[in-house]
Structure formats: structure tokens, C-alpha cells
Amino acid sequence: NSQTIETGTKATKPANPTRTGYTFVSWQLNGSEYDFNQNVTKNITLVAKWKKNTYTVTFNSNGGSAVSSQTVEHGSKVTEPAAPTRTGYTFEGWTLNGSTYNFNSEVTSNITLTASWSDNNWEFDKASGAIIKYKGTATEVVIPEKINGVKVTTIKANAFANSNMTSLTFSSGITTVEKDAILKTNNSRLNTVYMNNNQYQSAGDWHKVFGMSGTCLDRADSGVFVRARLTKGGCATCG
Image (cartoon, rainbow, N blue to C red; front, side, top):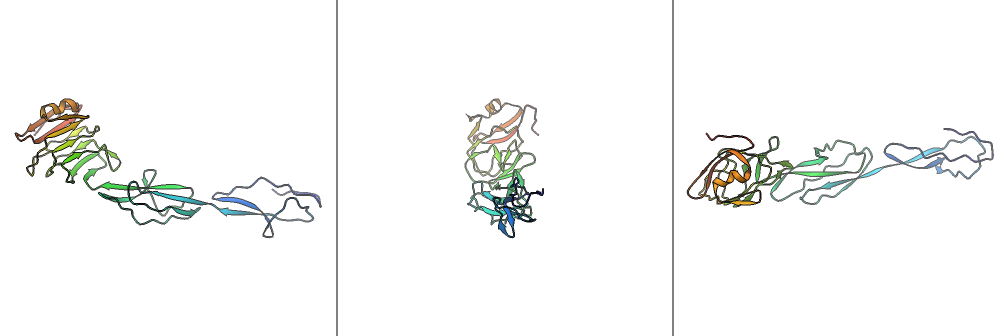
């Protein structure tokens, strides 16, 4: 608001104004900072001087190669960097708070973008939490609790066909193992199964520890688990 004062007296400095995306610097008279200790002898107009805010955009490569941060002015866009790399993974894009980031968006605050990766060892359905195919070559396989940030709950039929594994560790969140999820192929010998921190080499004990009902298991003489159809808390049959 304007002020009315007597000639030869001083104007009262008002509270600093605010402006979205900017920082107030000072009041200016004819391009110079105004001194509120000087006497006013005529009508004057003071103009606010502003500095545009700048923000830091940080890139969390989430296990991948380092990506430098960027400084961006308020309302401007961050430049999409070259994709990072990570051994055994494919880069899927940058996310903000779990959602894919749109690089056409205006930056209005400090933000951290996080790299999203897909694990090359697994063909995985995010919608159902199901492992469709194990594509790795390890002999001792550990099923992770999560793949690409999603909890693993199901192992689909033929998921471990043509694998060379000798031991398999199940994650605690798995509730369904479909029939023929684990097949005897390539003369592989699956001798040991780990569930709930316990080791089992007998198919007959598998369902007891895993807490599953309606089990159907076939065990070849070689010690290879040929078939498994398990459904936690339910009933399943083998066809």
C-alpha cells in the first residue's frame, strides 16, 4: 500500500512482499536500492526487485552409474540426462515419488529423481507379482522378496524350465507355485530347497514348512523336483 507522509520525513519500510518462485531483494528507486533513512521531499515510486529462485535436481541412480545433479530456475525444465548403466539390469526411466517423471514438467522445488531398473535375470509380471521365467545361469538361485520394486507372490508354470540350478531359495511372500513351475531339464539336479530359513531335501516336507495345502509333488529318483503345485491357504490339484 502507498504511504502519505509530510515533506522532510521518512517513509516506513513495509514488510517484504512475496512472489511465487522468487526471493525479494530490495526496494528500488530509479534502479538503485532505496535508503529508508533518507527524507522524502516529493512523490516517489519504489519498485520491488526480485531474484528468481533456483532449485537442485538430484539424480539417484539406484545402484547404477553416477549422474550429476542439475541447477534449474523456477518454472524451467530439467534436461533429461544420458541413461545410467547397471550390470545385470535394464534402465526403464526416471521416477519421482514412484511415478514416471515427465521431463516437460516445470521445476518448482528441489526434487530427487530415482532410476527405475528391470532385473535381466527375471521375466516378471508387475501386475500380478508373478515370476514368468528365470533367465539367469546361476546354480544356486535365490528368489528375491521384490523384483523391480514389486513383491513376488507367484511362480508361474515353466518358470524354472531349462535352468541349471542345484538349490532354490524361496522368498517369504510367495503364496502360489504353479504346476510344472520347476521341471527336470538339462539333466539338472535340484537337490535342495530353502524355505523360511530351513533347508529341505525331501519333497514330502516341502508343504509342511511352506504352510501350504492341497500340495501335489512328484520327485524323481535323481532328487530333482519335477512338479510342484502349491497354493498357500487354499487347495490345489495337479492335472
